[in-house]
Amino acid sequence: MTELSPHLKQATEVVAVRGEGPYLHGEDGRRYLDFTAGIGVTSTGHCHPKVVAAAQEQVATLIHGQYTTVLHPPLRRLVERLGEVLPEELDSLFFANSGSEAVEAALRLARQATGRPNVLVCHGGFHGRTVAAASMTTSGTRFRSGFSPLMGGVVVTPFPTAFRYGWDEETATRFALRELDYLLQTVSPPEDTAAVFVEPVLGEGGYVPATEGFLRGLRERADRHGFLLVLDEVQTGVGRTGRFWAHEHFGVRPDILITAKGLASGFPLSGIAAPKALMSKAWPGSQGGTYGANAVACAAAVATLDVVRDENLVANAEAMGARLRTGLEAVAAGTPAIGDVRGLGLMLASEFTTEDGQPDPATAARVQRAAVDEGLLLLLCGAWNHVVRMIPALVVDEAAIDEGLRAWSAAVEAGTAAS
Image (tube, rainbow, N blue to C red; front, side):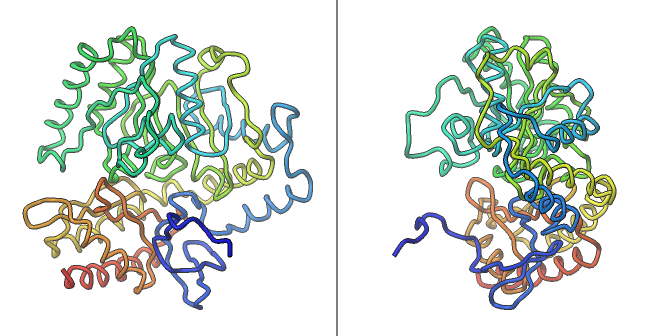
C-alpha cells in the first residue's frame, strides 16, 4: 500500500475538508479556528470568494502559459499591481514557485551582479530547504543536516535576539553590528561579500523582530562596502506585520526583496524584485523555470492584492494584531512558563521557558496539542520548537481573535498544568 513518507508528520490530526475565512472544517465535523494560515499562505483567508472566482475564470481560459515561451494577461496585470505596492526603485521582477526558489534566485543575482562569492546570513534565519537555501538557514539543524557538504561561501552573523541573550534591544543591536564588523575584518572581507540576507522578523527562528538600528546598520554597511541588502519577506510580506512589507516598520530600503507565501492566497507563487539596473546584471539564461508565474497563480495573486487593498487588510492586520498581542500578554502575565511574547502585526508568538530560563519544548508541545482540543490550530517554531506562533489570515475579525484567545487561555492552562 502506497503512503506518505513517515517523516511528513502533521502538526495536528485534523483532516481538513473545507475552508472558509479563518476557519477550517474537519472530516470529524468540527470547525477549527486556523491560526496557521497554511504557514502564512492563506493571507485572504480560506477560499476568499474573489480569489476563487479569479482562479476559476482563469482555469477555464488558460491554465499555463510558460512565461519564458509566451506572456499572458494575468502576469502583465500582476507586474502592474505589484508596482503599486513595491518600493519605487524595485521596478524589475522575476517569478518562481516557492520561497526557496526565490531565495536561490536572489542569491544567484547577488553573486552575478557583484562578482563576489560570499553571502552573509543572520543567525536564526530560515531561507528554505533546497541546497543553497538550506545552506543559508540557521534556524534549526533539522533543515540542513544529513546531506552535507552544503554550499560554501555562507558566513553567519548574529541577529539581535535580545531575549535569548538576556539583554535589552539596544545592547543586542550593538553586539550584532559589532560582530558583523568583526566578521568583515576576519572571515569575509567586503571585496568578497556579495550580499547580506535577513528576515525583518525571524520566522522559523522564533518570530523575533529585527530592530531599526540593526537594519539601518546593515543598510549603512552595505552602502559603505558595496554589497547588497537582501530582505527575505517570504513570510512577513503582503500585509502580515501590519505594513504591506515588514521593512516599512524600520525605514530601510532593500536592494533585493523576496516574496512568496501570502502573495497568491494559497497558489504556488514567489518572486524577487530589484532595480532594473541590478536585475539586468543577471547572466543570460540564469532566470527561468517551467512553472514560474503560472497563469492561475498570477490571477489568484492579482485578486489577492485587490482584496488586500479593497478590504483594508493591512490596517486590519495592525489592529487585530494589537488586539491579539494584548490578549497574549495577559495570558503570559499569569503564566510563568511563558517567558516572552513578541512579533509584529498578525505574526505573533509566545516562547515557553523553564524556571531557570531554558527553552521548554515539552510544555510548548502540550499547549499546542491542547489548543487543537479547544478548536484552535497552531504551529511551533524556534530552535527547540519551544515557541508557539500565531499567524491568522489577514481577514480575521475581533470575534475570531477573542475566540482564539479564549481557546489559547484554556490550552495554556491545560498544557502547563500537565508539566
